[in-house]
Image (cartoon, rainbow, N blue to C red):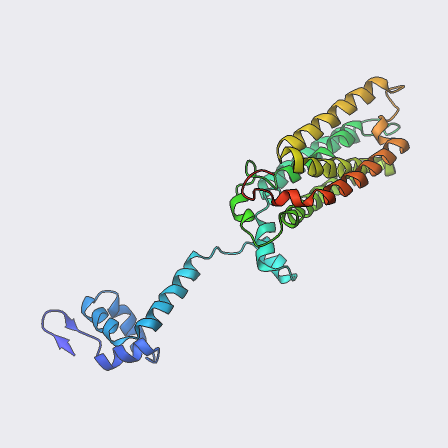
Length: 283
């Protein structure tokens, strides 16, 4: 039909077909273009359409527009069989962001370069001292309302607080250990001595997680990290010579680290229910 003032309008039969989703191209394209500029045809379409179906369509459109686009990591995790909500929580882990991983890589490369330039008759002391701290910091960034910008989303996730903590921890710890392992490859002259950071890293992380249940997600890693630095300073003052390894990197020290890691992991399991106390607040 036509109108002397507004010109051409979409016929009512076509508008009814449009409302039912039955209008075929090219008339469909013409109607789409015309409806964006014609209030009269939009009012006719509203009267001709099914209100329930129209509301449902708007709800689907709103949901699609509001839904966040999955990133590369999240899409990869879903393809590997990880549940959607778990993949989203993993992808949002601060310690998996490019900025943090890039900073870790830069620190490890510089430290490995310094260690590689030293005499390989001793041990890469600086690298071994620093490497256990990086996974600890990554785990500390991954849980808690202070350091995790997605904490509010995480605490309303339909899962046990301890499981949420373990998901984030495994992701951050896995990334940190992988980067440390790659940096270790840059120190072939030291052999297995360059891997002496692994057990201390596990011990520090497990201890910090166990203490988090009591102290909170920020004080616990700070306390553990400070204790590690104090231990290294004490061991450095007590060692026999410059070429001898620090106590934590000897066979006895490695055994102590393994024992601490096992004990801390057991304590963490015993305290797992504390991570559900006051969800939305620090444990």
